[in-house]
Length: 461
Image: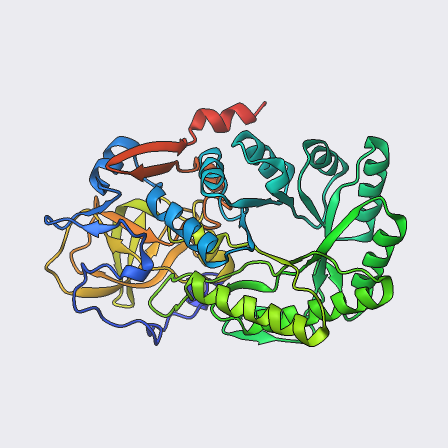
């Protein structure tokens, strides 16, 4: 159902659950692919993560809270690092970044992409070597570019002719030669299993390949010799479950690479195919393993290079969601349960669109489970909603919960590591939840809960 701005009576009140959603045989069972690796049901029926019971987390840190499984996050970092071998893995910080996360990335040998001066500040504070940082963004300010150059950021992904001019001026004034990549809009948009190879260059990111802007950007950088051009970059979408779109993208990027070689007699040493690898939010999602992604992507690049008689460039990728998404869940407390005329049961929790805007913004699907106990009652179809003054304040549109779900229950929503805390807001003046890391039977706060005092400090009257 989509909320209607004129009110619920004008909306679609008919309900039939999505075709992929099946009535569970055991409403307490945890679907493994939806949860981080250390999540389990204890003998008493309560959920635990990293050896810590969710009731203990709620008692110590309150709800709502983002619960970060450190062991799972590290395992996913390792899986991508090992699968892609000689390629460079840049964690996409926009998915979720915090000082503690950056420190883990450093320890696990990953590099880091940032998109703003704020993300760059966290990256540097966390100890990420500047040469392992990449800076993205379609409208980087002079201040952001200057800071990146002065910090020694390893690559800046240029996104416009204006930016090339800005960065060139900074290079001249600082007597440096920043390393850059050109972001190419290759005309491929990939979402899950679908991609359309035409008519998707109408967007704010990158230089158009078909219109010739990408080639012109390369020509400009090479002619002026103020910036060190390292290679080409593309990003084709998000929640991608196969490599079909990447195959088209790689072919088009390498065709440009071949044209550059023919015109300028050089081979650019690097190629970045971006990220967007999907995760399982619900049972309908079937994400690929890192090793399978690596096998397919490397095969595609090697085949195209051989066909074009090019050397194989140093490959890099940018997983964010695929690493942090499954490593975190959000823990809520149920406040009210309301049956609406037999249409559906609404389960209201103490968070909502301020801590997870993705359902309202993207029509994203999530799962949920009663986490603080087991139930012997049969499953009922429910909708998990938040506390905000919006009819569209929905966290989980359709889920089977036990018929005795009630006020005071703890409810957990998996797969909230990516773009939930990063996109959180203070709508209705609700303070943002903390991020609580768990590992080896211990929990610690890595991002503290906001307070009303925090909000009032910004209100200078």
